[in-house]
Image (tube, rainbow, N blue to C red; front, side, top):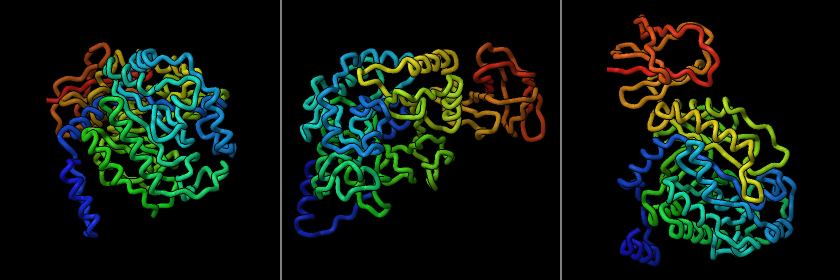
Length: 433
């Protein structure tokens, strides 16, 4: 917000004049960043904080009703001596991912960055004493990996997070604080995140669902504050609702856009903003010592493909150990995804959802006049594609380049695939005229 506009706003508020809220108008830079976000297709979500120490997921404080004062004692033993920001970024690049979204502050209220708004942070409250966000920002900027910040709107430790929401009721918070003060606290922390760590790709909010539907979070004020600091920064909010005024992207938790298999999306409609789906690699977001229920590499690659075919990015999570390392099971899967993307990445990166909507057999992605058909589940020896009135220049297998026979039929074409062998994804490229 320009200084003269800010002063005018203050004067109007002092005189009691009501200021009509203007519709959000994204900047040219913001619109460009939206398209770049769509192009990236694959990001790594990192849930890391004090909750990694009990090794029972990121909701342990709430799930076990741990008193917030006792929970805070974990900070005295938090020393992730094996943390290496450059190694993290190297592993992310090896996965073929283009951006990182890290939890700057989760629901437990512990900040993983150097903040002056609270001493409950990794620099002031732990013997480690290092700003891991600063180190990660340097490594990301150096290697061309975009950095996004997850930021929790709710806080189980902060006295001023009042009224209490649906969660965190058993953590010993009885003092009634002031919401206005908490609101200023959030604005100040967001200012730090957007001024101390260089260019930030997005702020990814979570926790709005903690309060009743009619609760006034004053989100538009928060959104405008973010855009005043970094106009091109994208705002994504995991509120499980249709997009709100001021947002730049829409995310779906553990669901592809338009589905509601996880029960989080409710009646949220798929909007026109850039889309993203976030998913766990096993069952928990934060590190869990006993959670070995990892999805297979094949499942993860196919989920990435289905996300791209749904015109969405995939934000795939890892929960680092308390020492700052990624679990080997996660690394193996990330690297396998990266190996697959080295071969088939052209059919994923920079694409949009294809002419043919997702089907039971797979999805399509598209880049200009190149249509990529991702066959994930086909039992027959032929595949009908509804490409009526589309002129076709060539059809070939993407990986080997061999021509694939097809027959024009009413309503489209019939691909003569033959019986398909074992593969994560059989990719066909159709060149349209």
